[in-house]
Length: 86
Image 1 (cartoon, one colour):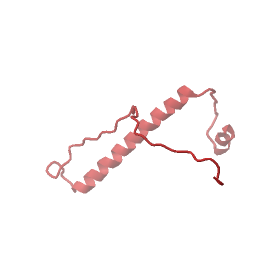
Image 2 (cartoon, helix red, strand yellow):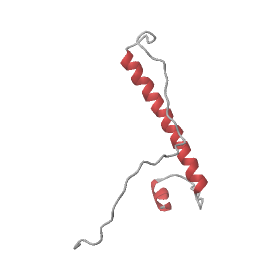
Image 3 (cartoon, helix red, strand yellow):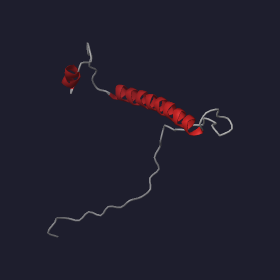
Image 4 (tube, rainbow, N blue to C red):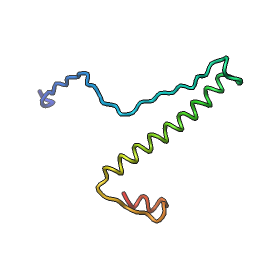
């Protein structure tokens, strides 16, 4: 072929071992909420998403720290000093 060799790509299903599960159960329904149901759901989803983001950030930070080959210390976190690390 004038474009070089041809590579065949085969796709197959592969199980992935996830170690994090996201479940939310707030027990909200139109009879237990003394406010607008949509507003209550929006409030709870906002709080849940913030909590889940914090949890995932901690897990990722721990993973990165555990697998780092070198540790650097900063006296302060100014933009210039953080950029200098990279």
